[in-house]
Length: 288
Image (tube, rainbow, N blue to C red; front, side, top):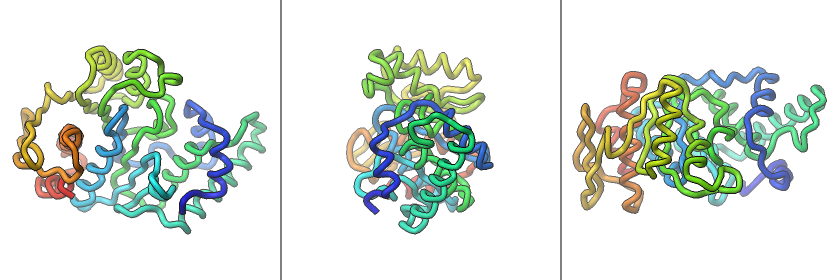
């Protein structure tokens, strides 16, 4: 479906930064934000959607059940929620949206909250995605940050590994006008004691991310320092201290996609102990 009547109404109410309302609602309805054993959270200014799609393809080829949540959509709102490479069906989306929205209205009324709307468009879609992935019992959840990171609704889930693809000027009215302030918001997705994979970015942004990672006892793995790639005609050669992969074909078009593919490979390699993936699956996933 192009959109949904509930979403059409909510689109007029804008965004709400922060996860407080969504967290309270999910707690009220008994939906655990720590129910998924393996969650990849991908943020940044540009390239995060591509990295998410690459990861989806790799893990699906490896035999895992994958739930993918991205935004915005190109044509149909169903595109935002995918399981096993397929957009959520109209029937499932309608059922989950209506049920979640009705619960949110009941929760808001019962608790007496003074909210413009119980859940915003993005909060409702995020809650719907979580419920969908729980019903499908997916092995891997991949989340693309909507706006910023620290106060984004996707930050409601506890991630296993995070990635910040790039830092540049975007949404400066919300995130700030300096790259350091933008980096601070985007690095808000970093959890305690996890791997944080980062791409090429401004030195100031890099320092901010490393500072936040260090405060969370997390390990930064940076492109150009901890892992590298060289471009080839059809793709790239990838190398880190422990892993080397040559003649990797990248299906998505553009030189920047090789940068994104290197990040996806590092994420997958860093998590081999929890979600093993064979080299053929990595190669097939990136070439698709």
